[in-house]
Image 1: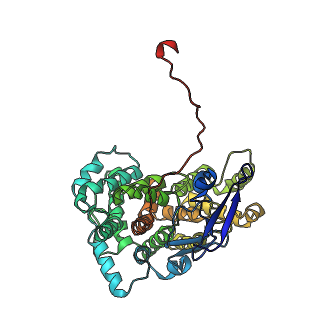
Image 2: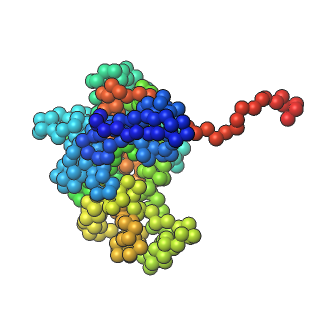
Image 3: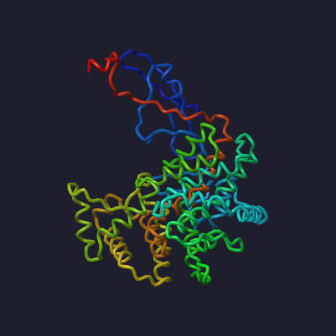
Length: 430
C-alpha cells in the first residue's frame, strides 16, 4: 500500500472520497476503490476489466509499452535461451529456480504421474469420433476430480501441490489420447524414459508397427513454445481459473474452466485463426492483395496474428520465436504452400509502412501457428498445445490464490439495462 492517495469529488453532491494507491514492485499503481461505494454511493464501470487489477500476484510481470515479459522476475529472453519448460513450470509454481536436486525430484514426480486412469479411455470413447480435441480435453480434465476425490481438500497445502503436479503431468497424456481417438488410432502410454516434450510427441505420433524417429529440432522447438506460452499474467483463461478457484472449486474443475476460456478464438484460438487466414489467402502470389484488403476498413478482412492487445510496441515472445521458426523450417526442409504464404506475409508486414507505423508486428500466435504446421501438428490441436503449456501458469496462479489470505469470491457488479419495475399480467390478458 502506498502513502499516496487520490481524492474523488462528486460534483453533484460535493461529497469526497479519499482512496489509497496500491503499488507493486514494478508497474503502475492502482487506485483502491474498496470504499468508493460507501463514501459516494458509486461503483466503477470497466468493461472487460481492462483497467482493473483483480488481485496481487508475484508470478508474471508485463510491460506492454516496452515489450517486457518476466516470469518471477526472470526475462523471458533468458528463460527461452537457457531454461526448459519443466524448469519454468517449477519456477512459476515455487517462485525460485530449482537446484539440481530440486529439479531432479520435481521432474521425477511429474514423470511418475503421467499415466491416466484406464477408465478415462472409456470416457473419451463416449465422444463423437470427430469431436474437437479441446472438447475432449476440457471434459476429461474436469473428470479427474472424480478419480482423485480423496485428495481434494484445498485447505491442505500438500494436496494442492499434488494436484498441480498431476495436472502438469497428465494434461499432455490426455491431450495426445484425445487426438489419437479423433483419428481412430490406438492410444499410446507415456514413455517415462523420455523427457517432457519428447514423451508427448511420441504419444501423439508413434505407431505400434514402427518406432518414431524424431528430429531433435522438433522437441526443442516445442519446448520453446511451451516456455513462451506458460503464463501471461491475468489473461482471460487465467482470470477464469482464479474466478472459479475463488469459489473453493477443486483444481481440476478450475483448470477445465481455464481450458474452456482458452478455446475462444479471441484467446487461445488465435493461432488456429492464423492458419485459416493463410488457407484463405491460398497462394503467396495473393499476399499483396490480402494486405491491401486488410488496410481497407470497409472490407471486413483482418490479418490474424498481427499486433497484440497488451504489447503496444512488439511482442517479446514473437522476437524469440521468429528465429526458431526459420530454424525449424530450414532443418525440416518443409515444402508446404501455406508456409510459403506465411513467410511472404511476414516479409511484407515487416516492411510495409502501414504496419510499421501502427506497430502491427507478427505476434507469437503468427509464428507458433507456422511452427505447429511445420511439426505436422493438426490445426485442431493448436489450442490444445497452448493448454498444455498454460497449465503450468494456471496451477501456479491457483496455488498462489489459495495462499493469499485476502482472496474473496469473485463477484463483479453490473450496470442494469433491463426493464424497470412492472406488474405481472395473467396469460389470459396478454
